[in-house]
Length: 115
Length: 110
Image (cartoon, rainbow over all chains, first blue to last red; front, top):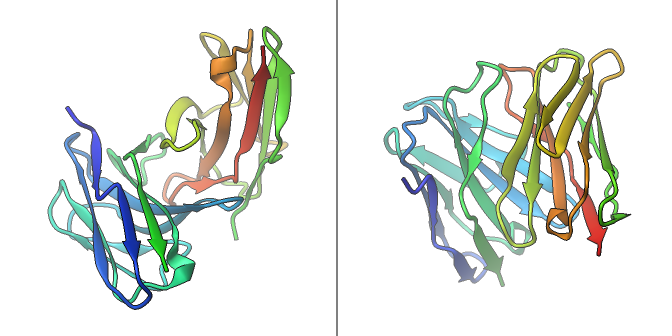
């Protein structure tokens, strides 16, 4: 049982390049999330998927797109990377969004640098 | 804009002392409250969750919730150097995504 896995662990991009961050969970969770964490800013929600087939914007969605590929996988795409997107990205999952006591479990993170 | 406020710290306590971490939130309809611990370079991990007013104890950790004052706290008894980390408070109304505070950095001095 690996929990939440993310690939890659590290990535360096040049401004304007695109890439996709991959996330998968094996806990049979319905809900998945993408966060970014910057020094002094805490965790900020980019997008989330309450259930398979749905996605919603979070606090900071600009410059990102997501795909809920199936129940297990939720990817985050940067179409044209900018230095402001340099950050640590965390994927998380939970059993049922919107039911109150719904614990989120986090992946190990991806450290992205955009030059 | 729903806000969760935490003192950024660092909060320094001697080994064996009680560490007290505080969090206030702005959304009065918040129902569920979580404390996550994050070691440097690692991902957040859940320590405690609390849903009703009062205290909830788990080992050396006690979460305290006061919905009238919109205040939630985490007490760590017999603090150990291994407790040195950033502690994140997170809040949700249930039908809305978690909102995280920016975290309090705790340093336990041996």
